[in-house]
Amino acid sequence: MNLIWLRRASAILALSLALAMTACGGDDKDNGGGNGGGGNNNNNSFTPNSEEQWLGAACACDGSKEWPCDRVGIPVPSGSPVTGCDNVTDVPGAQRICLRTIDEEVKITAPPTLFPEGYCALGAVECTGSNLCKMANYGNVDDFISCPEGSALLGTDFDYELMGDPVQIRARTCVKRCNTDADCRPDDQITCIERNNVKFCYNEFNFKYTGEPMVFAF
Image 1: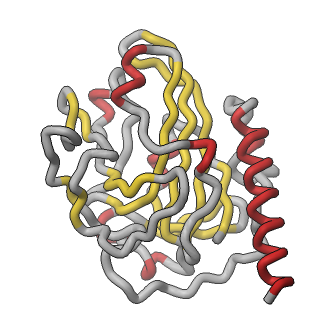
Image 2: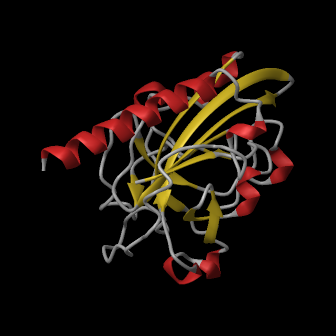
C-alpha cells in the first residue's frame, strides 16, 4: 500500500511540474497534441463509470443573482446552480461546471465551444491582460493538478483577443475518459477522441480556438 501511494504522489508531482512548465510556454503547440505533451500515459485503460450525473453527462445551469448562467448573452461555465452533475466529485482548485455551446458568431467576447445539451466537468480558468477577464475567471489553475479516477485532465494555455484586448488564458478541465464512442454521447456530438495516447469524451471543435491540450490520465 505504501508503494502505491508513493507512486501516486510521484505522478502528481510530475504533473504539477509539467503544468507549471507549460504555463511559461502556452503558445508552443509541441506541449500538446501528439508531439511530446508528456503526462501519465501508462494508465490508458478505462472502466466506464455506471453512475449518472458524472463527468461528461448532459447538464444545465439554473442560475442565480450571484452566479448567473449567462453574461451579455454568453454562457458562463461557472454559473450556478448546475443541474445534472450531482456525482461529480470535487478536487482542489477546480469548480464544478456545466460547459455549454458558445456560438462562433460571438467569438469576439469568448472562445467558441460546442457542447450540445451541456457537459459536466471540473474546471478552472485564469484570464489576464484585460478588465474583461474578471467575467471569465473561476477556480484556481495553480492548485488544480488532479482529477477523479476514470477521467483526464486537459491543460491549455493560449493567447486570445477579447473585445480588441489581447489576453492570456490558462485553462484546466477534468473530462470523462472512454474506450469507444459508446462510452460518450455521440448523439450530442461528444465522441471518444484521443490525445497523447489517452482517450476521452469531447468534441474536436473545442480545440479550434484554444490549440491542442496537454492530456493526463487519472
